Amino acid sequence: MKPDPATLGADARFLTTLVEINHEITSILDLDELLQKIADLTAQIVPYEIFAIFLLDEEKQELYHRFNIGYPADIAKDLRIPVGSGVTGTAALERKPVVVDDVRKYPRYIDAVKHARSELAIPLISKNRVVGVLDIESSEVGYFRDDQVRLLNLLGSQIAIAIANAKRYESERGNREMLALLYEVSLDMGSTLELDELMHKVAAAVKTAINYHIFSIFLLDERQGVLKPKIVIRSNEREFQKLSIPLGMGLIGSSAKLNEPIRIADVTKDPRYLPVHTETRSEMVVPLVHKGRVVGVVDVESTEIDYFTDYHHQFLVTLASRIAMAMAGAELYAKVFENERRMDREMKIARELQHNLMPDEMPSVEPLTVAALFKPVAHLGGDLYDWITFDDGRLAILLGDVAGKGAPAALYAALSSGIIRTRAGRKYPPGQMLELVNKSLYERPVESQYVALAYSIFDPKNNKITLANSGLPYPLLVHGGRSQFLELAGIPLGLFPDSKYQELELTLTPGDVLVLYSDGVVEAANEEGEDFGLKRLAEAVRSNHEGTPQEIVKAVNAEVEEFVGRCPPGDDRTMIVVKMHEKLPIADGFRI
Image (cartoon, helix red, strand yellow):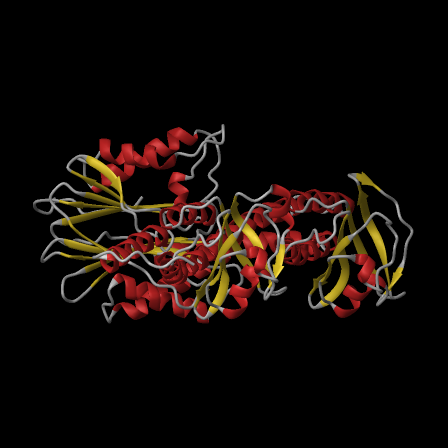
């Protein structure tokens, strides 16, 4: 390793570079974009030909390529390095940088790139956990300098934090997409009460998420104690099987008897496997449970070894309960029909109650006026809005969007609103309020539920408004006739216990318009599948910003309705418009 260049001011430049890089990477939540940015910034410190970021598979204690430059494609795809092996594995194990001036003299070197001569591996550690390893190789012997190693090592913890945050964001985004798919699948399964048709719908729905080779559903004959195939699809064709599998036999029988999912990476290495389909290499079985009783199993097989992922497992496990419920529903049609009639009556009552929970009168805090739009897509909406007037004259304004729709989302919205109301008396700043609500919701987990919420406080004494956001679209501000989105992001409430939320403070001037809205406004789609979008929203508000908040709300809603035409809404639509006036207009705000 080369010595540091002795130059005056090196430490100052060193710290400046560290701060600049830290600022750039912590603002990126998309993992692919983040890794590309890390690669670009690393090149400014250490020009390279070969670069990789390995992430740690904690369960298998292996490092795998997540991003690379200069590696052959086949090696990058298949290379997995056990912790403690090679230069990168050693860095992960010892939790400190490893510099090899000449890899030909390093006995543990893994010869992945033929022309490499020196290598530098920096462990990426966040909260005392190894997240991965940043690895650079060079064709020159003794290429890396002390100052480069020192800077990358200090930067490693910030890179690890940024990667951990991006992975959480990626996981959250994946979960949201999965929830949306599960919702659509559930609707499709609920469209029929004929069991054979239901089985085909389930097979098609699973195919959208898992590219299986063989799909089967076995139903349990409790009297005989065997599982019999209800449907088997092989290579997209229906296959008729007369196979009966006793409880406890094979992977299918074992899953049903244990009431546990089974995922096998290589069936040839599992003694329980029954070789019914000789081409099968990996298999996943999930029990179908209704009211605590196993009624069957859903089974998927692949011709690839270790094909099924954690995502596949989570998807099928979540879907299995819906499959079991749908099957039970097909057998209990008469009772379901009567229950639906009763539920319709109750849902109407619940909608009236929810409507009454929303504030009818708009707040009057001179020189601020407010208007609101609330249009649930179903009988019950998962959006919420509210405002709280403090005894010191300040006004809290909040708008939220719960994951999902219908009664569960509406109940979760009511729970969230109640927690905020309970804590409002202490007048917490917006960022702290979101942290407290997040902890309360996390301590009261409801499966597949979380809420994106914006909370703000307006102080009429100085016309300042302070905002914090936990996953809603960026607030829109029109100032001086120009519109801009305020980059204020955050993780939705109820997902992680220690999420932190930034605050943004604005001084509002006469004529300023601030808009909070749920994603149902900008994601409203027309018959061509095109979203209304942020640009149309910004232009609609800007072109009407001289009107009252009521007029702005009406104008935006009219433009959305005209845009979507006869296309039915896909999500709740909620919006709050706040406007500063030189003095309070005579008319109060109102709700649509």
